[in-house]
Image 1 (cartoon, helix red, strand yellow):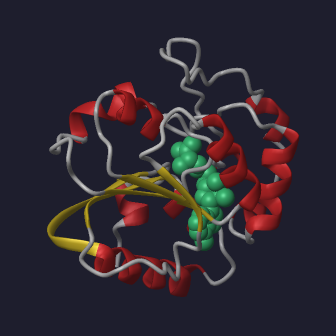
Image 2 (image 1 turned 90 degrees about the horizontal axis):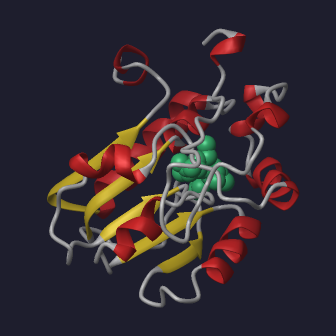
Length: 192
Ligand SMILES: C[S@@+](CC[C@H](N)C(=O)[O-])C[C@H]1O[C@@H](n2cnc3c(N)ncnc32)[C@H](O)[C@@H]1O
């Protein structure tokens, strides 16, 4: 990736509806960060979420993705690297109930638990997506919105992504779906 091809967040801006209203963050604030920071563990993300706790939507919002998330409302859904995205809050408000959100930043998980007190059936867990203490064959849908991009910035990139994909394959049920929303074009993310 070129330097200016960075993971600059696309804010799902003022058009978002409901109680979750991203767009108050200032994307330019983070423009000068090194991409390497993104893949270097929770320290970078903890700091970022402490400094900027406002909802911040990477790449695409729920309204953009809704047509791709066409599963039964009772489906078991895992949202990996949830950050403070509004995605699953909006899904919950539309009737999805069995949603587990994970992120390895304890700061953002604490913030999301507080923000979602009125959505008691949805879980927020501090967890490493590379080693998930979750049962195998447990989910119908795994949603990754820019977590793979984060791993693409990691120092041990190929090993990290292989480990991650094996974990996702393990927790998905047969016939389950893995939805990846990525900054990278298919040639960058799907190439052998
Ligand atoms: C680019 S942000 C995307 C946040 C959110 N999915 C969104 O679309 O707005 C990447 C997120 O992945 C989290 N993350 C990074 N490495 C992780 C790991 N090994 N396990 C779980 N989450 C991780 C970061 O803390 C951060 O919240």
